[in-house]
Every structure is written in structure tokens, then in C-alpha cells.
Amino acid sequence: MADADPKIAAKGEQVAAANVIETVEAPAPQAKKRNWIRLALMISVPLLIAAVAGYFYLTGGRYESTDNAYVEQDTVSISPDVSGRIVDVRVKENQRVKAGDVLFVIDPEPYRIALEQANAAIASAKVDVSTKATDTGSAAADIESANADIALAQATWQRQDALWKKGFTTKAALDAAQHEVLAAKARLATARAAAQKAQVQLGSGVAGSGVPAAVQAAMAERDKAMMNLTRTVVRAPHDGIITQTSRLQVGNITPSGVPALSLVVTSPWVTANFKETQLANMRVGQPVELKFDAYPGMKLCGKVQSIGAGTGSSSSILPAQNANGNWVKVTQRVPVRISITCKADRPLITGLSTDVSVDTKPNG
Image (cartoon, rainbow, N blue to C red):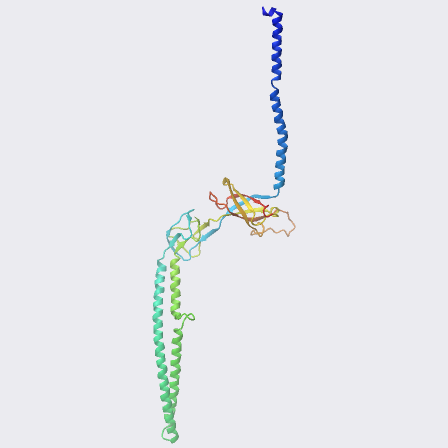
């Protein structure tokens, strides 16, 4: 019945038209929001580009970086000062040690015996000195006896000479008296020489020491034997990590002066090979940031400690020779030593690859 009523139909059309208008006008707030987003993007994107461009403009050329860098540490070859059989090994591969720790021990028995022999040599030298002191006293007595013989011989010769002049003696007796004078003088010279020799043998080896030379020589041998005995115990000269211990076995004979193991001193630094074109503003003391391939996320601080005096190629065993005219220019690299000023929470192993960035502004 309603479909046949025109009033009802007209009213329905008005309601449908109102719904259509409301449906069309409803998205207006969303379109306004999109306009604000578009406006914000139009403003922020140029500002971001300007900020990035300004950063690169202000920092351009300030940082010099290279990944041609690696960790280095001093390595000390430990060799014994005396030779002998190894009787005790106190360390193993990659063990950390402190300065003064015992590394290994060489058989001390031969050196202990040598020390006893040196002590015996000192005692023998002292006995010899006492004997020579007695000889010195005997030589002094011989000098006195020779002087008395000379006096008697001269008196006898004078009497024989007087008798000879008066004709109461023979020429043979006079000559015998004269010969006795000469013989007594010879004995005196011999006694004096013996006394001087004994005195020299008792003399001091070092001026003012008061110790006879023979005793000093024996004492020097004793000191050497004692030092060698002490050197049978080989100790670590520095803090570090033990490596290359394959030759260090109990029972091996180790000669003196031949390395038995190595000690990596735990004081690392970084050697960075910069291109020669990167050195214009680089100075000693500039701050450095260090990154390590082995430890992602770990950053350490450092500073430029020194700049190499020559390029890597010029320091090689066979440097390039460009005098033949067949030459191609290659950018050279210069080693720069970087000291590490921050404490690392991971071990810095020798040879680790490192990324280095030097801030050249502070001293640039």
C-alpha cells in the first residue's frame, strides 16, 4: 500500500538523498589529515637533506680512515744463558705469566759442582798467598845474610890486600878474597830479586783493594759459577702469554743462546697503513677510534703515537727500483702507530684486523 502512496514515496526519496549527502561529506576530515602529512613531508625532507649535507660539509676531510690495520704486540724469544738438560717445565702453551715467574729449570748439578770447585780454588789461592808471604820473610833473611857475607868478604879482602903490599901473603889468597866479595854481592842481588818477586805475587789485583791478585781471580771464578747456577732457573722477564713451547720438553738438551720458547708481551698497539694522501692533516696525539673484525660492536679509543719514517715499499727487503723508466705511479702507504688508551674487555690477539678512524680536527 505504501508503494501506491505518492506522499510516502516522496518522503523516502528525501531520506535517501540526505543519506547520500552525508556519505559524500563524511571523508572530509581524512582528506584534511592527508594534507597535513603531505605538508610535513614537504618541509621535513628538505630539512633532512640540508642537515645531512651540512654534516658532510662540516666533517668532510676531518676523519681519515683505513681498514688496512692490525694489532701488534712485542714478542720476546726466551733463551737460557747456560746450556744443559731440562729437568722441570712450569708453563704450557698460551699460559699467562707474570714477570719473575719460573718458566723452566735446567739441571743445576754441574753448576753446583763448579761452584764448589771455585770455593776450593779460593781456599787454595789463600794458602798460596800465605806461602808466598813466608817466602817474602825468608827472602828478607837471605838479604840480611848476604849483607853480612859482603861485610866479612870485604874485611877479608882488605886484610889480604894489606898483607900483599907488605909481602906476607900470596897472590892467590888475595884473589880468593876478592872473589868472595863478588860472590857475596851476587848472593845479595839474588836475595833481593827473590824478595821482590814474592812481594809482587802478594800484590793486590785491583789498586787499593788489599786482596792479592790470585785470590781475586779465584773469587771472580766463584762469582761466575754462582751466576751460572742462578741462571739454571729461567724466569719470565715481562708479563705476557707463553707461546711456541714445542721445543720445551723435559729431558731435552737446550744450548745457551738458542730460543726455547716465546713470550708475547701483553701491551698491544695498532699499526695502520694509511695512504700517503691521507697524511696531510694527521699529527701525533690526535684521537683515534678503533673497531675490530673479531669483536663486532666493540670500540676502543686510542691516539696517534708516531708516523712512520718511510713507506711500506721502501722498507721492504727488495724495494722497488724505478730507474729503468718502466714506471707506474702507485699510491704509497705509510705505517702509523696507534696506542690503545682504553681498556679492552676482550683479548687483543696479535694480527687482528682493525678499522681505524683518526680525528684530524684537534691538531689539524
